[in-house]
Length: 182
Image (cartoon, rainbow, N blue to C red):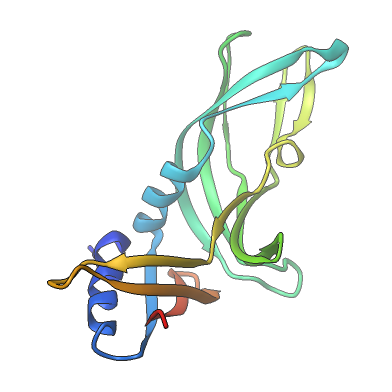
């Protein structure tokens, strides 16, 4: 099993303190991605229905079942997911298999990693078919970060930047750099 990302970045950053910059490449397999997506996915959201009311939905047991690199017919790298959706207020439960698009994007002038649900359709009795992909906001995380790496003299200011996301059928590849801040 590969090391979790949380252990890799500090090791690379520690090596970067002696040099001006270090290139970083992280590879995440399906198991690692399942752990990450499960932690990042929303657990509950409200869906507007007729008359100004809303339906509370819960997303559970989210896991990655496959990686789908971009193609001419389907742009954007994506993760195929499996999950359970519950509507506890009406006693409804169903399984879903949406796609989670993964890309570098720009938000308010900042580079971000954007995760966006696609094909998240659900048929609920008495409510009808809902395209939840339009109702669930994209999840955005900074692709750049500033932090202090502790050392014997107090700490070294560092920056990290993600510059490329690539996908194969076996892994998601994140590339960027870590450097000592000026």
